[in-house]
Image 1 (cartoon, rainbow, N blue to C red):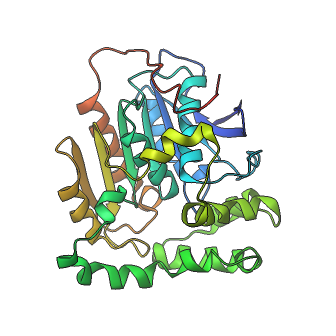
Image 2 (cartoon, rainbow, N blue to C red):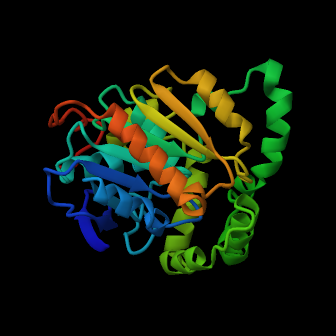
Length: 314
């Protein structure tokens, strides 16, 4: 495992890498973490992808140290999508590239999959299904929404000023216990303490929740991403959900399967909670690699079609 620093227009991202990230002969695999987590969540999948011939790049997303704070102060999903597109461009990705996201990374990956000019050939998302699957119809809302609302209390708590930052360490330890029962998160919590020290970085992480619900205007470079982040994904997509997920009810997986296009695949991972890529890495790795091998484009094609969604990244 090595590290890579990439300067984008509004943020400097530090990434963990497996496989030479500068070798454009290898297809790019961009791995996006969620909350409360870091790029280290990909310590099992990254090496497996490298062994399969990919160059895996797992950034600490904007605001998570050692990446910098965003100079524009924006932590909306559209900004996260823009960063993913910019990394694809800066790292000379092509149509063989895959973006894999978990939690907030899944929201980002699902949004990228909805873009008309998505440059990634394949998308994998975990633990948070595409937004259209979460729009329960009145007939089945009573079966899902009450329990999910109880599970999602933290999203409202995170809207409060100051208090979430002050209680962050107790909060995230509680979330890991509830979301992935029985999993020993000691190593992951240590990584998180280093990535979100008290102060601006910690506030930035809670800014993901605050911006998604409260921010009504975004800088112009994010316009296209903001237009599509809630839309249905296009093209090949694999969605994985842990059977024992304590954050997002597993029954959303069935709704995702019904709501997604026929090109999408959905699988529930037995014996795993929210952090399924850490709890059952052998199953998750195998599912991802199988999906990539089945849906790989026949010829690598260089794609520059996402430059508009990436804003002014050059």
